[in-house]
Image (cartoon, rainbow, N blue to C red; front, side, top):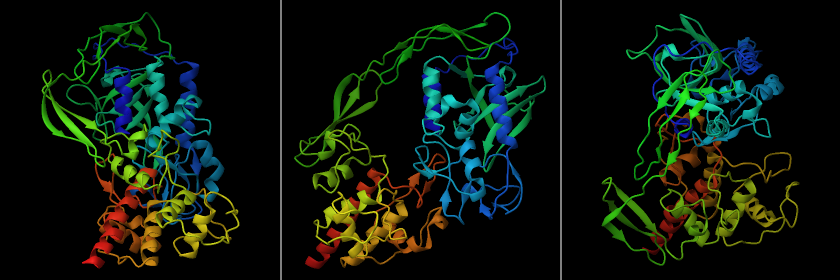
Length: 517
């Protein structure tokens, strides 16, 4: 979420501080009242779990780590995480009302934390909550809030972002803390207090903060977090004339665009004189610091020293035989580039088109077994017994082979579920079974040293221990700077490319070298 909030704020400029005492009271509008009504509905929403439910991310709820079955809970549980049910759920208001009695919902891949987790497709749980308050304009065609919608609104001038002190906060503001880790919505402001609506795991709630809770320089403090930035909707009317605030120009650098001078209204945020972007200069390549030429099989690079800013710039020189270079979304320097090249050069994986690999897309069960089947040499195995795997489908032979080798099982009821997503734990288990089926080393190693190791299902524990020990799978860095194993997260195409590459290098080829020696 940090990158998304930073993108939002830089997209609409971090404007200069507002002059003290210049902000007048905002006049409530229909738009604001609709937002307030939605916020009240969310924080007062009452639901009753029918089973004991563990709390997402181990955040305590009233001193507990769970919701008791039968207790009445007020506030939407956007961060519901049930270990008993084995799911991480993203729940919007409309979705939760439909499924609350069953205690489950759909899950979505969250880019902010690189895995299946609460929060919209872009963003996190607090962003989901904010999108609910802001309304339909922030929902995609499936009714799911997309936090990146705030960015286009900001660039179109419908939201204006700036630094605000506690005395300058207005109803309807979106407040961000200095770490870009949390966002709240302001429902009311009095002479002495400000009431914010927020999603703080595990439930949403309204919190009233005294305006004396400020830093020495006047910024609002909520639970030891300093809230210094706000985005303001330009749909809110205000009384009186605009109060202009000067927006200072910014010189461009080698890598960052600059801005011309401008001005905006201190109350409603409307641009009086729009600031215009000045393109970045680009590095001036003064001298070569390091140079590694490309080969037929390896990418090369050149490091230049910039005469203007003094920084070094690394420019990649792609290998003419690098399969990943034909894709526009697998650039040189990305962690997955070499793995995409490895699997595509050998035709184990293909792009989603001639120019797109889609590294962040999730892998289906049909895709996964097809990749392994290609690696195994595309052996013939007849037909499968699964009712949802028709003869002649592009994955039929692969599924039949994988089932015959015991590499994969069905999902019950005679079904394979070819379109179902594959989690990281499931893929590790599939590779582990493949290794055992073909006589490769498959002994589990030491215990897992990850903060979320308890989330690994019992049936996948040996496979995950083996996969980590063989460097097939590593932790995923989250917004809190900690590496998590994310066993329940959907495996992306980039992650599958890495795990298969490392399996071939570290397990299969290493075993061949040992046999030869």
